[in-house]
Image (cartoon, rainbow, N blue to C red):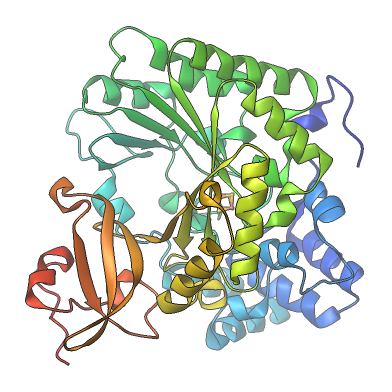
Length: 443
Ligand code: SF4
């Protein structure tokens, strides 16, 4: 793929495939009709979209379907339980639209569309304004879901926000206009950090993005010191930063924010070292850094994509080489296609330790593995042997109750546990972190 010429609208709207075209592409590129059939069934339930950049420049089709970027972006039958797969498959083969709709609805709701009580606990309950599309879980940080940013250039199969992209308005979080955000911020001086998220805010036109960000420079909002933008555009469509007036205006916008004294953090979602290998991404990173924004990287550790320490060590080293600070290794959340991508916490911990051992201090800045769970961000610091047997050593990096932050605590070791709600307090002193209704481990 060559760079679009200046002014080419393709720089903003990449060619991407989804739906039936995506399934045909699987068949054409892999020559495997079963894979194409499976993709057709699974993509009824979970959203899939792949940009031409990912297809042409990132995936090694000689390795597909075992190429990690293919696994990251293309559907696989094991993403659904067998009974769910067969339910949808039957309706698809029958060509019965209403049957497909009913089967898909049933399966989507069974996949825990909004994990960790996001809607019931994170959306502010404000009597005077409608805060739908905002999340305020920690006092200092506000998450904003701009309506126009609720898609991505490609979708990740493991996406924990997949419910944003399916045709279900009742599942979609989105603020209709910047005023929802600015009115809320003006009433909450404790907010120091605003995170634009989605979806991917960089799918938005720059003028729309500016309509959310420039009001943060206005008098009365000085308490907002940090602006974070979560994006995977560097991996899925780096031309957003490279070509045409939209790219240039985005860079100027970031420059205005940093020049005004805001700390601008680009929260780059980087899953695999391949994403940092093209000339396009290297140029895009360099342009982004020139604005004064700080570049940080995060991603979940997932099977089929980055489930070994060598991959993470290579990723962190490549990030450091390209001026990006490794920030988080997350645990795959309990939603969507976790049955395909998830792994035991014990395995994630070993991968994290193994990766740390292979990089210098500058690559060891990623915290992990971390669960972004209902009570807060919980880091697994390792497995320790205590008097009654092994335990996970845990620490809250961030918490709904700030007094919990930084205090070590323990959960009974469970080699199969994949998420916070499968853990039990090791002893009575650990119980306060889990909630009074969670029983202490009886071993
Ligand atoms: S980039 Fe983020 S929001 Fe978009 S599909 Fe991937 S995980 Fe989901």
